[in-house]
Length: 393
Image (cartoon, rainbow, N blue to C red; front, top):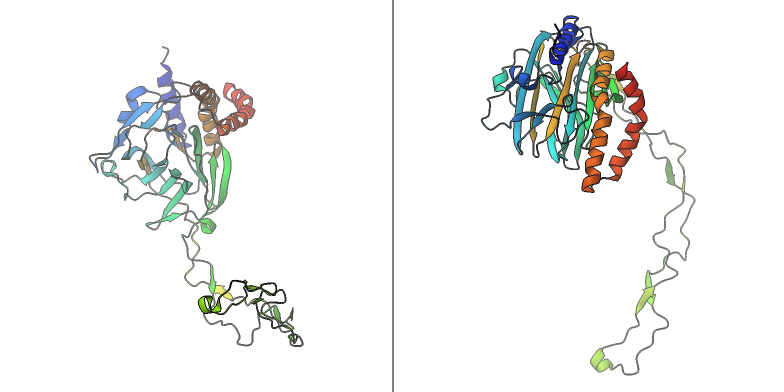
């Protein structure tokens, strides 16, 4: 018996899940079937509604369908549950695509990873989560990728500024968290940031602190230059800043009884030299800038488990949008970095060129094509043949 394509896709997904590499995968390939897997929060009565759509332009009408926000100036809260797991000893990869085709002015495009004991019917902005990751845009000042980890009940924001994409095209966002406490953020399968949890988040107290017992010595001279004691001010240095104009003449019709005593106008004195200051010489007693000695911080304790979340079980979209129209798709949670990269190439990578072509045609017809879009098209065209070959293989 020949199975429908959608059924084959679902079976393939389950097979990968059984292997343990993929924990969650959602491509919205079965029409309204997503409604049985995703639950809308009832915490507020006026949450925005979601719809399944590929948007106004796409590379593949079916493959590019995702969940789209549909009402302006609304909060949105939607989540999907999966088999709980711990990322102990393994990488954790969170990946999805976002398309802000509405020319977003202010709104979130991020996901949250929740513990499995989350009440999905009551998800709201204060619901405790493990990870928040993805783009956030609001005006010209906020165009960033959030990477927030919850550690011991507190949410910790990354200290680095990661710029997100702010155009109308679909982009692939990937977060990789490793057991050695390192991380990597990728956009469109290219690394944009990396580092360690200890360096880039304030989860732990600093390893070193300034020695509270240390004080700058009273005789410490940190002046690199000093006045030359042998330098003296010239006797003719002090001159007035302005002087009467020597070329000025009292008008013939000047009446001192009526006009008062005549005085010539004042002009800048060419002999004026300003405030005298002695020459500077190297300070023979200069010791350099005093550096406060540091000691080991008694409050610091290394934690090799900062990366670990024991009860991962829900992926959610909990956000606000002023202008709706964002499409979320191609969700993946896995412990296999290579699998995530290949999945991104087979989904986002397989349809992005067609999407670029379609939006270009629309822009030309509407006479709204921009220089930035032309630049993006040139960039994409350079990778198109390579990715097409990969997908065909």
